[in-house]
Image (tube, rainbow, N blue to C red; front, side):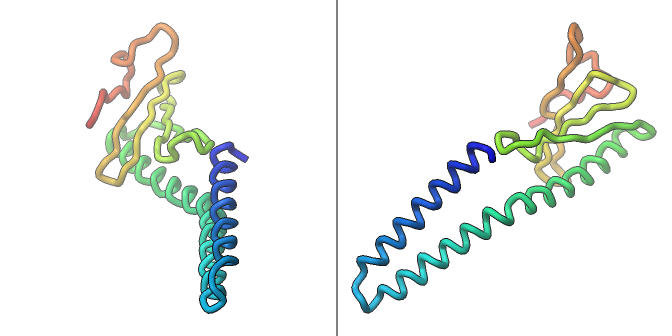
Length: 141
């Protein structure tokens, strides 16, 4: 498990324990309501930890489709491979593209939405400059 995930789960667990402790010290009239609220928040946190990875994977698959459409329009009759870096420390909406006719060059596209696709970075092979790339698009805002 990634350290960011461990920290999130630990902090959420501490938060939920504090809520249950607060519920213990509430007056008898509202103690049951306090436990219901603490249990509801616990359930919501649990569901969010379970659903988040699937939601991100779904969003990334949609972004890959959008990037594929963008590249088909911009570079017809070319082949490429789209990948992404796996891990919580990486932005899942930054997709890496390696074109078949330009081995060793990697271009990273930022995916905000279908109308905002931007080449954010590039990794040329040793001894090359970014402007020498066939698919170099430069900076965008």
